[in-house]
Image (cartoon, rainbow, N blue to C red; front, side):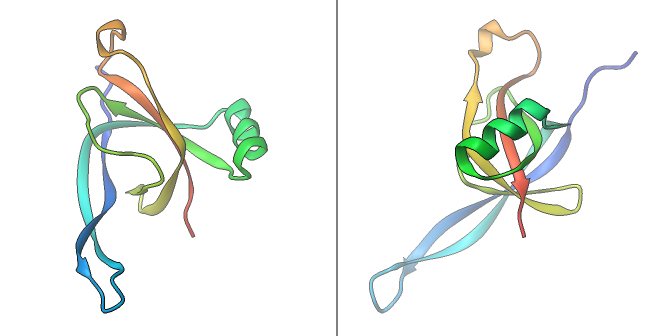
Length: 112
């Protein structure tokens, strides 16, 4: 049996590049490739809880590798040829207490 290996996904972040004539910030999308992310279908319990709490239907749960410092709250991501949006706050465990290479869970819904 082989080792567990994730796939690369693209995290789309907003970067402020200036202000418009009304003083509002102008942003541009910045694509960040995150390697070795595990993707699993959301459980029935996760789907039900998120619908009750936020009204959003989660489809997948992403396992983010240890050492990742990106902000995953309310971000757009791309994988499997589709666009997704993160739902809720990421759930992060203590790195030294988790034996495998992933310590953060992020749930995503279909975007669009």
